Length: 264
Image (cartoon, rainbow, N blue to C red; front, side, top):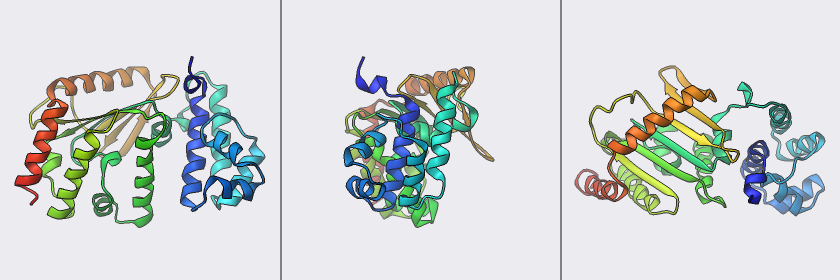
């Protein structure tokens, strides 16, 4: 069994949150280590999920990172979740699941998926500098070691739906092409047609322990679930989408065509 498989997903989620807040505070690992009076290697272990720190250490991190009680609360959630056979509802938070996932699958019907957006495209959608920075930091999982397998299918209309003007769209489509050739990234476009059982955007994150968390976009917001039956429906729908979508090579050809013909 590899070391990655031995790491508890709850530790990975907590470590990812520590790293996110550290980066947001503009600190490197050594600077944070000095601020909380530990070695840099210990900060590395915490961020990689290879150790479970004490609650008082989480409190010291909150003070150093000026994060209120965010990490103490995350530590409390971690403790509760490892006591439970299944993930408790308050822990089934999709962004946290995404950060430690070994595989991510998603379908987007209206917009470029958040992990694939450029800063300019995200700025038009979010209209808030801090929100854009958070979205860009979220994309760091694409460069993580080991990298997760990322398979994303988007409706063809996403390529034509103008967000921010032709220059923003051309840059965005060029970015999609660049990402589509990265290791472990699989990007497909679903042609404009009716596809059975597809009613909206959704995502599935597979954790290191192979438990899964799904997220679906509703008219009134998002809904996260760990229910096996609901996740099975989402997984089956994704398989149907894969069978109907263009393969990765034809997807690249279509993106190039739309970029040159529509967004010049």
